[in-house]
Amino acid sequence: MAKGFWWFNANIERKWNWDWDILESTGEEEWVGPFSHLSEKYKNKEVKVGDVVIGYSSSPGKKYVQVLAHISRRASHEGAVTITVKFDRRIGNPIAWNEMKENLILRESQPMKMRNRGSIFKITPEEWQELKKLMVEKNPNLEIGLNCS
Image (cartoon, rainbow, N blue to C red):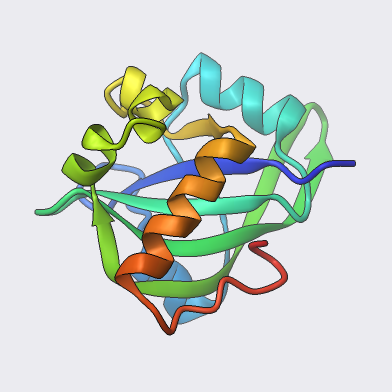
């Protein structure tokens, strides 16, 4: 099965109180994002163990990609699906929203087209390759690694 690529939003100011600093400090956390039909569809049917997570911080302050992670567990109990995200690495020089908006490939991505309104978005393999390219350009010593290849 091919690996999937996902854009997960975190916003510590929201009532669901989940952010990438928490994930980095614990190493692994159950994803707690707001309910939306699209995120529930992805979480319940498409997200799988081993998939890459691009961690985006929408607040406070700047809006940028700052973390790489992966799905480490997926469980179903009485119809409810939970997914667990495992921290891989922080991006020292993150990719800003405006950089992605100006990029010919990334501006066509689901998060851009939907103006980042949601908690989970699908990223195509081509978009993932472009994100990786930008991350390495801004962070020459960054090793993407096996979990995020």
